[in-house]
Amino acid sequence: MTFDQELDASGLACPMPIVKTKAAMAKLASGEVLRVWSTDSGTLDDMPTFAEHGGHALLASGEEGGRYYFLLKKA
Image (spheres, rainbow, N blue to C red):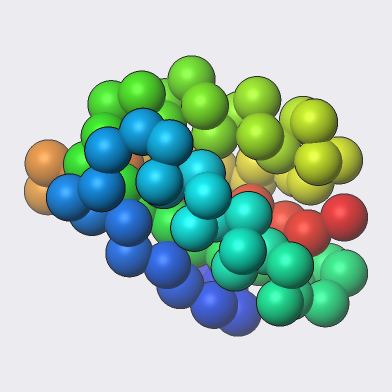
């Protein structure tokens, strides 16, 4: 899947991956996609909640190479 911007929040602990994601999403235009990488397992619960509360679409998520990834489409 293609994306417009990428954020590597690897090594950051809660709540920083969400804080950084929120800041990155604010810079995107509506409809653009952000790919986020994280090593914090808490993001597995936090990222879908963040997307839902912000009205954004969580297009995909998974694990690759010991890191978690999320594709978020800005509302």
